[in-house]
Length: 238
Image (cartoon, rainbow, N blue to C red; front, side, top):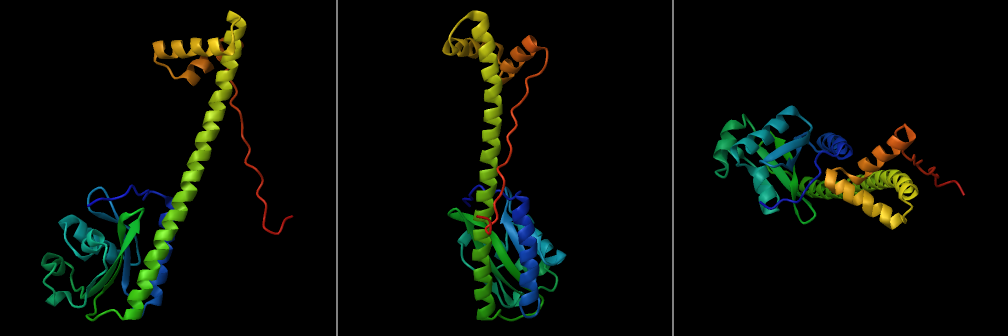
């Protein structure tokens, strides 16, 4: 199964999933058990569930490598079972599910590949009405959008952090360049080549070498530049 790289450790995303399954379980008639299972390196893992048992049903399928949730994920199509006792597709799952009678699983996709599945479990036999399945399909689409939005924000934060780190280390390197230029009476380009060659010969990162030079000359570790976040402006401010 080809799977995209999914940041399933995003805390904001998983908090929203917990709230989502709680809402879905409350609004659907009969209050079925709801789970959101995400693709993992091996099988699936439950990211959120309305009932502990729903998570265990996910785990059962992950452990055996067989079940309706895995089918929904692998095929990219919804999977429905109206009476597991009479369903021959997942005999082992049905035997171990302890009274579970019906289910409906909607696949979740992300960046062109399977993300997981949103699943309803019920101890009552019978087909989930069309309106319920349609609502679940819409909810699945909202979850995919939520992940894209959350991931975009996380990537932006990561880029900002990397930029700040790059600017901070660059400031230290510039200090070391000034010291080398003064000591050797050379250009900035020549000073940088000196630092680069020493960095390679000692197998030390350039910014670490620069910091050691600044500390050796000044007697103190170099001060890292501080970057303040710009003030946020509310929509009602001019």
